[in-house]
Length: 328
Image 1 (cartoon, rainbow, N blue to C red):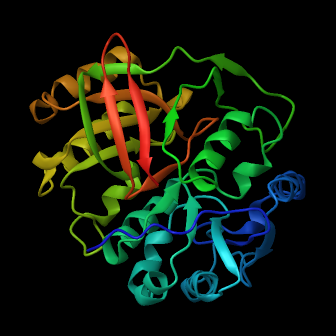
Image 2: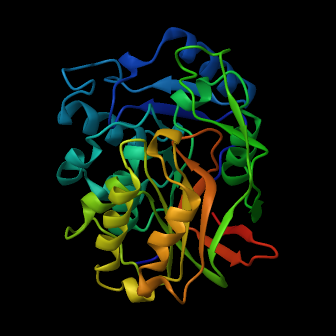
């Protein structure tokens, strides 16, 4: 299957917000106001899917409503980019009901993170379209300390040029959506080198728990020649990450995986660097591929934007490491 890259965003483009997982109804007006202002500053006209405010007992909406908005966003020729509201738990409910030809015949930017991982990788597996793991609509509602996230977003989605990922200066793991000004920053100690090496490959993965939901289905992409970007949220302790990773290692063509990049864990995950290294070193299948951890993506802030299905060059050495997004 050929890889399809969507057209980049530009000033004046109209973009649509949809809710493939949790509803817009859980997002405060304050957060929405900040997000809407950010989109306006980028020169993007923002519209909302017909069903985004619907909310049920699971803080989501019906499969029919969510699929309808997804189809509408891809079908509408005026729409140049699609943003998930936020993550959640249930976007994989949609997969059996999606018309993949609508997506394949109307390639455009589609971005979100966390639970949206199921859609990203399924879309790539079924259509070849590159989508993007990065800030959701609600993420743009973060008032302070957003420069790193915004800069990386623009490098990935407003430009064709290859770009380097650099570690952020600081990071946070607070509930900014409850109190925008009561923030706690931690100094970023940089990336954690676990296994050394230099490789190129296509990016797959993102949230490992969600990615693993696709295993054994037609929606799971071929792991050959991939570099896996993997992270998980606070619900995942190290023992859970360990067995989720082990389960991936048992997948067909894992022996053709070229490298692994691990996103920063949340504080309450209690993942110590030395323990993470210990987990990776127990897996002989990883001995000969580079593994880099503590990278700015996942459920802390700030985060990078990266292309699911795009190409990355990964160089991991004790002296210096590099992540360069080549094709996106």
